[in-house]
Amino acid sequence: MDIPKYFISCDWGTSNFRLRVVKTDSLEIIKEIKTNQGIKVLYEQFAKQDQLNQTDFFYEYLNNQIKLLPSEHQKHLVISSGMVSSTIGLHELDYANIPFNIDGKNLITKNMKFDNQMNLLLISGVKDDNGVMRGEETQAIGLQEYLQVQPEAILLLPGTHSKHLEYSNNEFTELKSFMTGELFEIISQKSILSNSIKLEDQNHIAENSFLEGVKLGSEGKFSSSLFSIRANDLFGKSTKTENYFFLSGLLIGDELAYLKKETKKVFLAAPLPLSNLYKLALNHLLGSENYVTIEHEIIEKALLIGQKKILENYEE
Image (tube, rainbow, N blue to C red; front, side, top):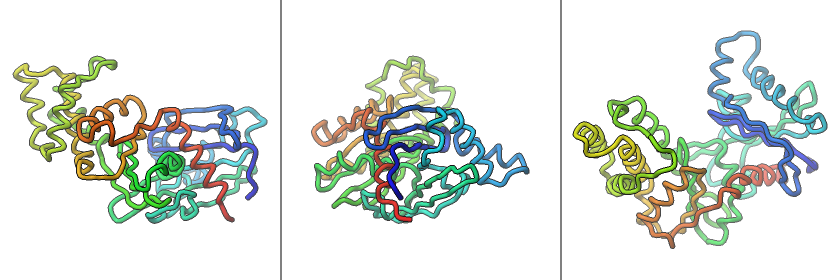
């Protein structure tokens, strides 16, 4: 496939949708569209109708969003990663296996062409015996150049389902998955503890409460420490905000606990405000000299870098 002057980057996740018109050589973003119409919401809408099949339903939404772009940029190649290639997405692709190479050559891709001349390159997710991911593999490929300063490294990609990827000799060799974000949402909003947890100040971190949670979580005391949140609220020993950060610390401490025994350099690629919490936890558990924080601007470009690499190595 010839490398185009521009491409349309589509990042279609479970909860959100994002299109970006990208100048290929510089990765300059010409135009961006964001919506909250992620794969999950759209699949629920698809299931309630019977006029279109699944591929056509998702294609129609994608095409309608592309029509909102400047007319001169509507016919570019669309490169899409994330949940779009899942069973509830536009078209299912099998998972590629770990290890996967930094150039994306052993990922599964599919070039789809539609009647209006839209050319869509779908990118698969990856799997091993213990986990799967869709979207993060493309981001990881885009971040690889920042990892290669080390012969071996561990890349942390926090989120609803946090991913930890081991990197060695130009390959991502192992995947660990953690339900940290989803568990936080369930416990803080839908459990008996929900009335004891509330974030009252978006700009303030209750650092002592958070680090106490990190300590207990990293010592394997996650479950046994949970009910103290309700007790401390009932007896006025902590505020709802302190409980919020204590629970966050418990979960993040539990996620990161194994890193205390690791000798590989750790690289953190987390969006704000998550990165602030993970940095506090890593400082506590590893010390600041044993991990590297990847800057937000680099993280924002990582998916584009990864999609460009996959495009450059795509073979029809």
